[in-house]
Image 1 (cartoon, rainbow, N blue to C red):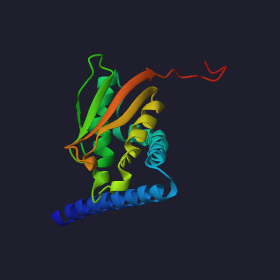
Image 2 (cartoon, helix red, strand yellow):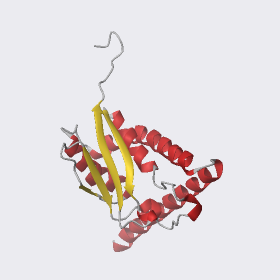
Image 3 (cartoon, one colour):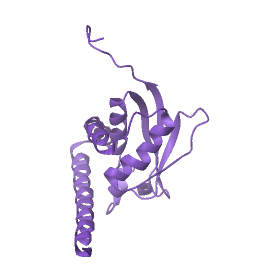
Image 4 (tube, rainbow, N blue to C red):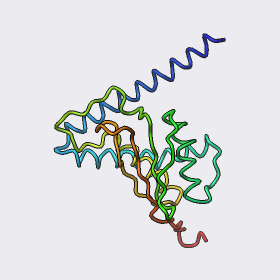
Length: 180
């Protein structure tokens, strides 16, 4: 029995490492294809957005999470369920704004940056910017417009990785004429 659980653990570790290395190859190719880090950052965000738009359906089906009542509940679901489900980590939710419309996700470890060192000539590259796009795209599909950006990054020498999320507005569903 323990042999089977070791295989499962080894398989998950291999899948994680394969994902990390594949993501690294993608970022490397984008750096070759685009002239500056800002363009690469935009492309990573755009790719992440497209992933998030599709990933939310899988998340809702697999997690059995219902509609969140407020932004605080949304933050908890993102940290405790979504990040755990897809990246195997549980960031902490902290640094709430007084209005309750902005918070930080603190990642003690970021699996995307395993085996990564940023070259000096890519000082403005936001290597894990794909995550910002994923969060923005997924939340947009559940009628929440948010601004997502990296505030700190362990690749740049910060102690932790911090993703800052700000609620912008609730998106009203526009039903086609006659479908009311």
